[in-house]
Image (cartoon, rainbow, N blue to C red; front, side, top):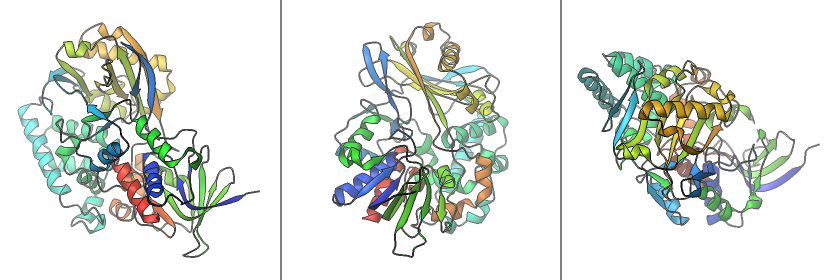
Amino acid sequence: MSSSVEYDVVIVGAGLSSLSAAYEITKKKPEAKLIILEATDYIGGPIKTVKMKGANGDDYWDVGASRIGSKQVEIMNLIGELGLETYEHYDEGKKYWQLPNGSIKSYSGKIPPLPYTSLVDVLRYFNKVDGMQGKVNLEDAKATPKADEWDNMTVDELKTKTLWTQVAKDMVDVLTIMFFGIPPTYLSVMQYAYVIATCGSWNAHIAGDRACKLNLRIKGGTRGLVDRLIEKIGKDKFALNAKVSKINQDGGPNSGATVETEAGKQYTARKVIVAVPVMCNASIKFTPALGSNHLLPSAIAGLFFVITYKKSFWREQGSCAATLNMQGTLEAVQEKTEHPILVVFDHTSANGNPALMGAFGALSLREKTSEERRGMVVKYLREVFQSDEPMDFVDYQDYSWSPCKEIPPEDAFKEERASYVLSSIRKPEGAIHWAGSHTATAWYDCLSGAVQAGQRAGKEVI
């Protein structure tokens, strides 16, 4: 038999966006009775900071979402308000890229040294995309001048229509998969242009300079941001292992909503903020049904690693360790595991303890043991740096994040036109309000976007 508890606000999910909403409510209306319902036993979503052995003893490293940008207003303001400090991500020296044929080359600059015709091709494509994103209406995507055309065109089709050379096509495929987590075949041009527009431009989305979205890290780990927010909100405001299965608001326009967990516990609230990853909305039964299904193709999981070392041997080689594996990225879409590592970059701690971080490709690699994946990492690093030094590591950890039942991008792609979803994804439906980085109008799917969306939703329900 279910039991019901009454609240002013119920927040579904306990990621950064949820915490930002709760903090906004707590600051502006401290007397508000609120509860945050989290499906798992963990607060923080993709943010994960772990204690590991380093060159100079134990230290802390992010093995999930970690980097932020100095131009990202919302998260930089929040970090300052909470008394946290940042430090620069190391990006000096040569970089590496593995070509589709498997060969590994070093380079400097933002873009790998493509053949001249392919470089011209890629730059022409970027300029075209930047022109397109400038026309996107972020507040009402379906009012974008070419919304109908872009809804019905995939990035794969745009690539084929625009590019001449195969190398350029491969590069666009790789960058799309890397930055969106979605194969270009299942990503509409509308969603593509919209996401880029929230970052200001394509250059801001991928640039390696200080305009980049990823040039800073938080000292002590991003988990510090989560912990400070929990302190401000209050630990008693969280209910863990409370997966929401139903949200019912059929009692009339001013009757609030009832949120029910899988265990049958009910929470009645004047307002509800749903702040779960976009694909997780499909696991909640809404009564009455939503006007829009709120479903968009999105990255469904992540598998990351951190490996620590006694010294920064890559810096001694004049490298920042940044590595892009084109071959592995293109293969990952097909669930091939022969080249499992997608990217690598310097992950040295604020205390100067050397480390590298990277991401795996094929989701099936989650079925391997951590020791097996560690072997893959060491093998790949030896190939990249042409050295046995990667074998002399101090510690290793990896982390798999999968927020909910996985909906393949191809299934989400078929559901509804992106412009309609993007136009409705922030609009309250009765007592239900929306947060999550996918509802942000600045830095979609980034930590700063999560903060912006949470703050907006918090203000809406106060």
